[in-house]
Amino acid sequence: TQLLEQSPQFLSIQEGENLTVYCNSSSVFSSLQWYRQEPGEGPVLLVTVVTGGEVKKLKRLTFQFGDARKDSSLHITAAQPGDTGLYLCAGEPGGGADGLTFGKGTHLIIQP
Amino acid sequence: DVKVTQSSRYLVKRTGEKVFLECVQDMDHENMFWYRQDPGLGLRLIYFSYDVKMKEKGDIPEGYSVSREKKERFSLILESASTNQTSMYLCASSSIAGALFSIQYFGAGTRLSVL
Image 1 (cartoon, rainbow over the protein chains, first blue to last red):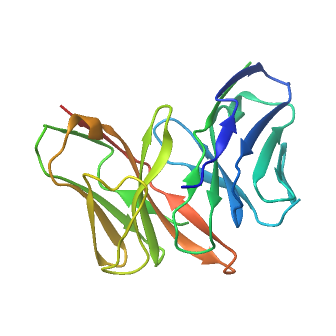
Image 2: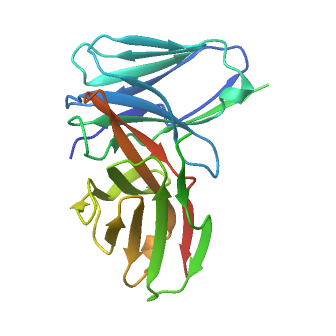
């Protein structure tokens, strides 16, 4: 089983600060996805990165896939209370029907 | 919008009961998945299916079975519920986007308590 180590597990910061969440593995993934989950709901896909070194931006969120496709990061600029939630990274071992391997998640709290 | 619907948001069952968790998707996706989510353990894959009547074991299949009689419906079955199966259960379905990666869409989850 391929493992994804996600850090930090918990993060509480003030509104306006920047933060980075990391997702690391010793295994190569064909793609890596970031999800956000709110209490009582299922995860919702934010972005998928496929190519080594790829950088994708989603408003104040920047996602990067490592060159070797073993790690990824999520950077949030000027965090806002609406960013509060559980952030999950998930790797896909091979394209197609297989299930995803999830990290344990980062609980992010942005205090006003 | 893609919709994955889980039949119950909350369930309370007794030890030894047979439990059915139902999931329906409306996007004609071939692939469907069942995960459980526990604090400190994240999401773990129980079973998945890539076609009608097909099923594959995930990482933690013990104590569970599944049924996929129709493309849109994937059921998770707890033959004899135990307290260690108390958890949040998430169903997902996926499509292949350009054959490079799949996008999984999740239901809202069923929080099961086994007493």
